[in-house]
Structure formats: structure tokens, C-alpha cells
Image 1 (cartoon, rainbow, N blue to C red):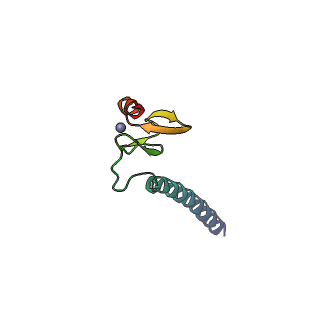
Image 2: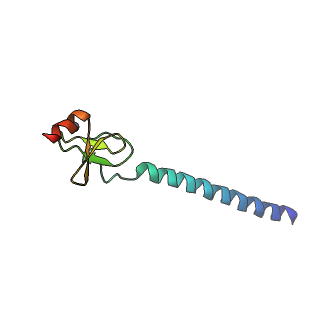
Image 3: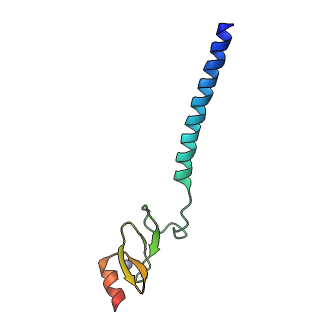
Length: 90
Ligand SMILES: [Zn+2]
């Protein structure tokens, strides 16, 4: 009788552990395979973290985390390099 109770307790503990492990794996998988709506078709742009914006000068997709930013008429533009940022002025 005591063995049966222990077996049930063990089963509950194992199920709880499995559920938490599956939950963690599921979250990690969701983060890995989450589609990025800002990536260009074909995945041509740089694959970095952060939102991707198109450089209006050369057309390259740049991450907002690494881009050269410039605010023109209240809009933030993202450039791949200071050279492109300079070109946009002219
Ligand atoms: Zn550029």
C-alpha cells in the first residue's frame, strides 16, 4: 500500500518535471523559429538582432541596432554606413 502511494507521488513528480522541461523547450523553439516580418524575401539582409530597416541610398537592409541613424522631417532613417548617410543629404 505504501509502495503504491510512493509510486503515484513519483509519477506526479516525473510528470511535473517533464511538463516544465517541455515548456522550456517549446519556448526556446518558438523563439528560434519565430518568423521575422521585417526580413527581406530570400533572406538577403544581414541576420542580426533588432528590427531591419532599408537603407534609402543603397537599398541594403540594416539592423536598427547597428545602423547609422538620421532624423529627417521627424522620420528616423537608417543607413548602412556614414557614407550612405552623407550621400542622402545631397
Ligand atoms: Zn547604404
